[in-house]
Amino acid sequence: MSQASEPSPAGPAPAAPPSPRTARTRQIRLVGLIVALAVLAAALVPIVLAMGPPTRDQLLEDAHLKGKQQLVIGVKDDQPGISLKLPNNTWKGFDVDIAYMIAGYLGFDHSQVRFLPIESEDRARRQARDNDGFVTVDLVIASYSINAKREEEGAVFSASYLHTEQSVVTLESFKDQVSSLEDLAGRTVCSLTTSTSIQRLAEAGAKPVGRNRISECFQEMYDGKVEAVTTDAAILAGFVTGDRAGVDGQRFPVLLKNVKPLKHWDIGSSPRERWGVNTGPNKALRDLVDLALYESAMDENNSTWENAYNANLRWQQEYNLPQPVAEQQQPDPRKVEVRQWPWERIALPPPAHPGSPPPPTGPAARVGWRGRGRRSSGC
Image 1 (cartoon, rainbow, N blue to C red):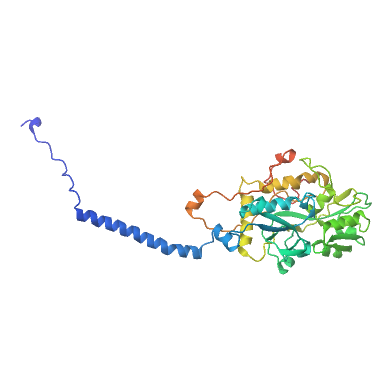
Image 2: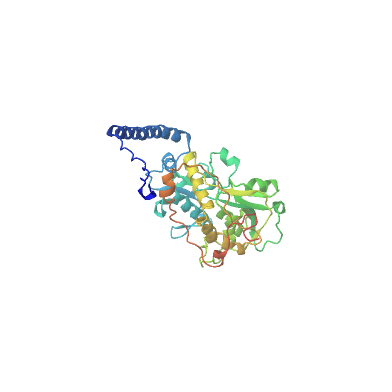
């Protein structure tokens, strides 16, 4: 028999279609598996919620911010460059911009933030003036240095948002040199009553005079009642700068009388003054503030802190040499663990930051921002 006439080998027999009973059994098993996974997920979710960190939404709820229409913040009203209430009843300064940044993260826009003036001795209790009375503010952002004594008095601080140091200001006509607080021994020196500077003055042999407002200290120096003023350099800088023009051409209004030229002295202070936000005893609120600071520091696309520094502090440096105004880098933030479901990471946009100061113009806008160091702001 030839090859052409040989029968070809038989192919595999086609599989028999599953019987209706088998197909139904598979469907029942699949549905059962889905139901079992759903039950397992429902059982695991409460465990995850109980054991894992809270969500940002839970923190907002626990901080009593959900549905709140206004955020009340205690700030200073007499510190040029830090927080100043202008004659037209608007507020301007580094602390004001930081307040708007934090408020934006908490879900409040410019129009929902209310600033109230707060005195130094009232910052721990969060009591600010409101017309003829006092109210408890939600946050205190008022050049408030973090230390153990203030925490014992009831202040609950966020991570620090600015680092500066103690310095001294005299009239430009002051005849002697000031390189340390000891150079002021026997002289009358004014500072804020509750500031960290008062004790250091007494230890150095000076005659400390305490006032509730730093502007009162400067007025007394202009009037010849005290010879020097000392507190944090970032606070003093605005008075030294006076009404000289900033990079945007704006000037601090002259609010005091008999104003004279001033000299800013670098006293080589080693203790770092770390400014923090007093959030009060609500832990969720403190965590939210720290989250706002963390996002500002870690997000390369978020330049709100840098813009605030540029607009209010950096341009003053030339008028305050040789004293650094403040460190030009945002301090390292505290990381707060917040739970996000996978779909939140993908679908939800980050919180908005209404009220951020605009990017600066002029020479300061071209300065880099990621270097750290005590003397990094110009000296």
